[in-house]
Image (cartoon, rainbow, N blue to C red; front, side):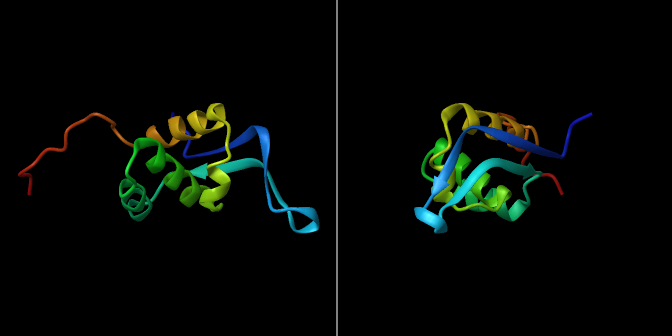
Length: 96
């Protein structure tokens, strides 16, 4: 059975800002993306840009924070989110 939510503990915490106003992300919580989130992510110019946008939307964290994730954490998050889509499967046209 496929999990519909996951918490990923980041291999390296992401810190945004400085001093007492700094926000530290040590983990991100992901869930199944909505159609609207997928549409927004699809507008990105690259596959990585699309992944960054989708992770930010689903996790509810700023895109700038997602951009600072390590590759390993980005891959883990993206792999989870891709589990909800059939990547590479052509859409069937003409169905009504």
